Each structure stands twice: as structure tokens, then as C-alpha cells.
Image (cartoon, rainbow over all chains, first blue to last red; front, top):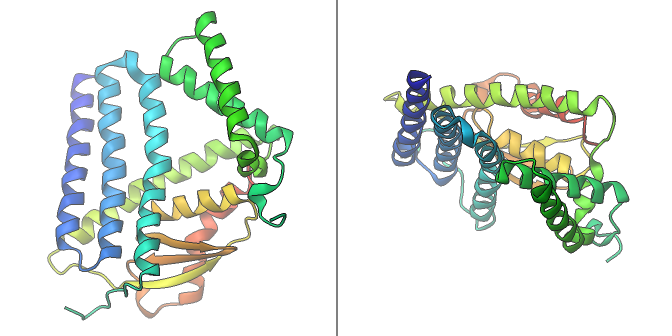
Length: 97
Length: 174
């Protein structure tokens, strides 16, 4: 159980790191939002699952938190993306520097 | 004013679902089924539902059939698989030195009619491989696609973005 919990925590941390690397490498705002949303959402979920395995008494609260994250994180990303789109930020094209 | 769904009176079923959701959140957060906690939770859920009032119209699209929970579970399972795939896909793109991207905006039509259904679809698309919902305008979703499947059948590929989720969401939302 301890090992499984550690694996989940590690995977979650790696996904969050990946989100950060993605933020640095991606060429424009839309791709950055994509990289940050996907990796950090699953990363947070993995970390919470890991915590749940370490502290089985907390599972009900953790399920509620996972639910909130899964529901609100994409809404936040879409709202940001829409704001940039409405402000006229163009999509980066392949071959552009 | 009357044409705006936010100002229409919410159906009774929306209040029942709103109350149930609030109570469920209360039970999960307190982590106990003691009678006193349940009573306090019911009271808070009642006040919260009453305060939300006509905004609960949003929940009116939910279908309350015996098969609905089954469809919900089927949707969640599909969603979790897609979320995992999307992370592998994103990891591959972020970590490959050549940064394989060919982004563009595409438009997808949805057959879902309820606000909640469209919101759930938009959310799901944001968390699936390579796509991000940028705007929702009536039945059209504007989607940022990180890799436009280079020159293959664009129309079919675009439809496929939404089709998998739409078909599963339709089981419990109109």
C-alpha cells in the first residue's frame, strides 16, 4: 500500500513538472493552456489518490476535492482561452518562429 | 428577458437534484452519517437550493431514468481513459525535441440541447487528447486543436472530437 501510494505521488509530481516544462516549451498561449491543463489536472488527481492511499480515513473528502478539480479546472482553461480569442490573439501556425 | 433560459422558472426536479447534490457534498466533506450531521446538512442544502433559486434551471436537462446512473458511470469510465491518453499524448509532444505541433481552430456542432450537457461536453473536450474548447456559441463549439491530423479527412476527424463524448452524455442529459 505504501509503495503504491508513493508511486501515485511520484507520478502526480512528474505530471506537474511536465506541465511546467510544457509552459516553457509551447509556442503560443493556446498550446500553453493545453499543456498546463491536461498535465496538472491528472497530476493533482494522482497526488490526491496517493494521499488517499496513505490516509484511508480521508477518502470521502478527497473524492469531493477530485470532483471539484475535474469540474472546475477545464472551465478555468476554457475561460482563459476564450478571453484570449476575443482579444484577437491569433493561433500560432506551424513553421512560424 | 423571457427568452433567456436563466430567467425561466426551474422545474421541480432541478430543485430535487440541487438539494441532493448539496447534501452529497456535505456528507463527503463531513465524512460521517451521524443523524445530527445529516440534519444540519439537510438544512444547509435546503437554504443553498432556495438561494440558488431559478439559476437551477441549469440542472433541468438531467434525465432521471433508472438507466441514467449506468450511463453516468459509462461516461466517467470513458472520460478517465481519455484523460489518461491525453496526458500521454501531451507528454510525448512536450518531451520530443522537435515539438510536433500543427495547431488550428476548428468548429464542431453538437446535438446536445441542454446548457449543462453542452458545458459537460466542452469540459470533456478540454481534457481529451490535443483539444481545448475556446468558445461555445449555441450549438457550435470552437475548439483549438493542437494537431490537425495533417491533411487527412478533416471533416470526419473534426466530428470525431465530439462524437464519443456526445453519445455517452446523451444517456443522462438532453
